[in-house]
Length: 192
Ligand code: HEM
Ligand code: HEM
Image 1 (cartoon, rainbow, N blue to C red):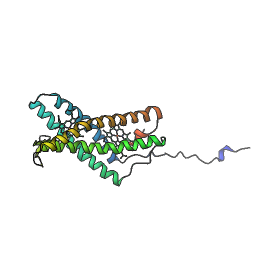
Image 2 (image 1 turned 60 degrees about the horizontal axis):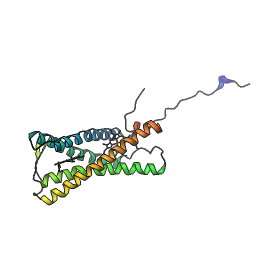
Image 3 (image 1 turned 180 degrees about the vertical axis):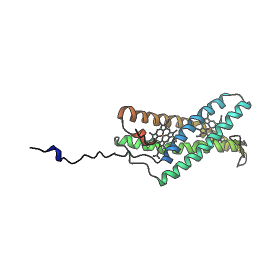
Image 4 (image 1 turned 90 degrees about the horizontal axis):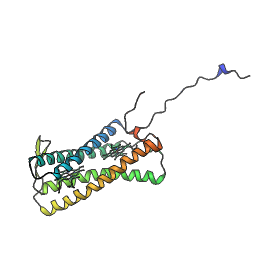
């Protein structure tokens, strides 16, 4: 008869969920918060008539936008040295779509601030960075350059909307439909 008392003790190993590094997570959520601020600031500023209030919202929009440029540049440098954790399985086409979405997000969140900085500088406008210190125009006034950068900036906003909506919907799909750990990878470990 089988002697159950001699069974080897069972060790329950804790399988560690692969995650982005805490720095990558912090920079990711900082970008998300800044993006949530930069858009309404632009919508409010452009809806106001030329006034001190409009200039206040533009200064804030520009300051947050410049910060996004710095944070995204830092993220890309960090990412180059700290690869993402191995991907969660999804069919190949969707995995490719996800990767394209991520790289276009990086690209667009560099292009938007860059076009904003150029459109503003080429129009001869000074940015007061969070009302702390001025960032003077770094180039000569040039209407053609300012107009071109303006067109890129105005058209680029639709890429921002599309990419962010797709990104958030994809996260919701992982969470609700696939019920996998994709969101956990971008969150600190929960010890419960
Ligand atoms: C991620 C960064 C940024 C995003 C997502 C963004 C987005 C936007 C959006 C949605 C608008 C409103 C466009 C409209 O009227 O329909 C706008 C306008 C504007 N932005 Fe930005 N922006 C960013 C960064 C910047 C920066 C860094 C500057 C300058 C330093 C800047 C300067 C401006 C200016 C001057 C306008 C008014 C343009 C016009 O009315 O023709 N933006 N931006
Ligand atoms: C509330 C809004 C957001 C949610 C819920 C969200 C969620 C996520 C999640 C769950 C991941 C991990 C994906 C994976 O493990 O493969 C991720 C990655 C990423 N997110 Fe977001 N995100 C948001 C906003 C943003 C914004 C505004 C940006 C703009 C730059 C952004 C850019 C990225 C990028 C580039 C990655 C890939 C990181 C890498 O592998 O280099 N996210 N996001």
